Length: 256
Image (cartoon, helix red, strand yellow):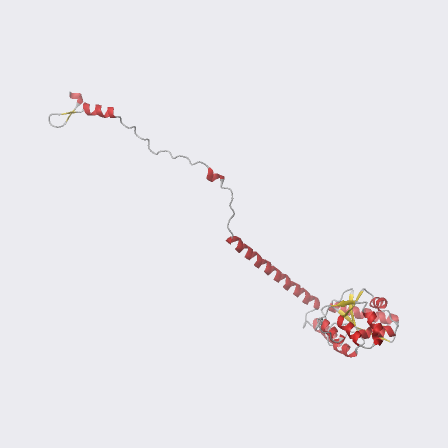
């Protein structure tokens, strides 16, 4: 019987791994009812669960599940001691605690994005969890732990993915990653554009003068040579040499 149970568990785990991207270490959310059943049947949860699931596990619970055990009868004190040993995951009910069943449902949401296994003996909670695709259920029968077979809701979703009606969870993740990368790129581009605009408005820092501008200006050469100025003596000589003719004209000095 033990070999059959392990084969059944291995087949179920591979279904969730392939179709819903479950990976080790498996996260198992446990409530008080499961701990109480384990205590009655003398089952060591920490030792037996990793062997049964054939992989590493992280056992966890919520503060609402712990507070529920505190408010109930003293008979559940042993279950409370067991539950306290597990990791406590944050839930939305930090101020006002709610029943454990309601808290666990809120932790899963509509798609079980964090890939939780649920370990519970609560039948009402089990019925509600079967309506959510991709939720592995653990419970105790007599002295043994059992991993329930995939629900009809999970099987229908896998069938829809195969027909191309719904995207595979891995494809959805890749699309989300692409969207996030695109957002980051747009934000970086906007940031660069803003820096460039700010850089244009900034005043230029004072820098050393251009060495070419410090060179001495060359003097322009005169285009035409200046004629030498005549002295007063030369002017007088010319006036003396000029003699007027009797007819009123100037006498030619060669005929004198």
